[in-house]
Structure formats: structure tokens, C-alpha cells
Image 1: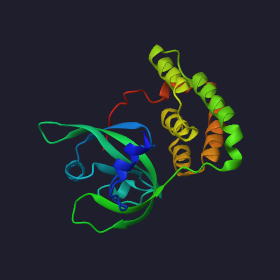
Image 2: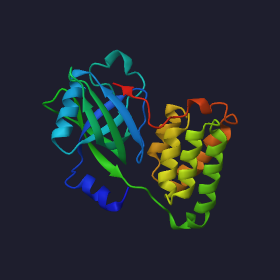
Image 3: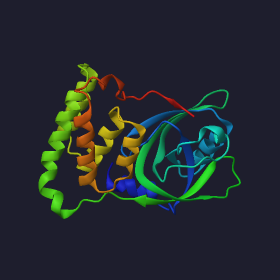
Image 4: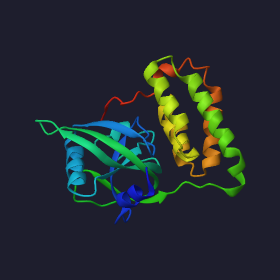
Length: 232
């Protein structure tokens, strides 16, 4: 995403955001998540977003959410602010969305609201590139791509996407987010990567996770693009 489009996305954003919590999805910046919206409160959230800035924060529910899912169970402290890229409303009022991840955010506090959906005050977390890590980033980027290749099944469509990653001039921060979303990591591992603003530390942690994966035997669980819809 260009800096101009990022600026357009955040023009007038003051930190108050609609919250869409799920127990099993960690969204990252620079990736697209397909969503099927059917609960009334999240239909209202979608309608409100489409009528306004199209921004929704996807948050992961903290452990122990099950007894209070219909209420307001605790959220994990880091989340991802996204923008509705495309949407389709079904005849019965449900929605199919593609949500583009934009920025890491820290959830500061949940806010009182007149809506049925939840709202929170969040702080945008920008990527950090420490000067002392500059010399190693190209090597680490190659290492991550090599590891990702080994984790892929021999499917032509996925191989083509990998080559696009290699040939495109993406930053290490963007690459780590795309790989962290795509690989079959645990929710806890994904959440740790989402919460790490230091790109060098995030890349090192991701490389460690990839080394511990069993040779690619788990590759059948990686995300497929376009992604399958996640239901609320």
C-alpha cells in the first residue's frame, strides 16, 4: 500500500473504532480477510462502517470468552485496524466482506456506545526499523522466503504467489505480516507477531517459528488466496 493511500485511510481517524471480536482469527496489516457477517449486532456494525469511514478493528477474544460470547468478553490488547475493501449484501441482510488490514493497534479502553456492537479507543502502532538492523534485513528477508517455499505444498497457484513475493519490492515488515498470516501458526504465535512493532525482532521470531515447523508437513493448513470466509 502506498503512503498516499494510507494517509487517505487514516484521514480524520481519532482512535475511536468499531470492534469486531472473533475467537479464532488474527488479522495482520497488508492482508485481506474474507468475512461472512450474520449476527444482528455485526450487521449493524457493517452498516455503520459502510456509511462512514469503512474502518473496523478485528480483535481476538481473550481466553475464557465462551460463557459470555453474547456479551462483552475481554479482548486481547493488540488488534488490527482494517478497511472494508469490497462488500456484498445478501437478500436477508447478511454481508460478505473483504477486510484489508491496515495497521496494528493497541486497545486502550472499551468505550460506552449506543450501538449493539462494541467500540473502543485504540492507539495506532507503527513499524519500527532500528538503524542497527539495516545491514541484516536483506539476508533475513531471503531466509524467510526460503523457509516459506519449503512450507508450501507443490501447488502451482501457491508457487506463483511466492514468486510474486520474491519479485516484488516489499519491505521486511510487510513480508513478515503476510507470512505470519499465511502460515499455520497458533493463535498465540500470531498474536505475539502482531504485537511486535520492532520489525527485526518480529522477523527473527517468525524465522524461529518457521524452523520449528515440521519440514512443511503442516503446509496443508496455510491460508489460501482468495481466503475462505470466516463467520462471525
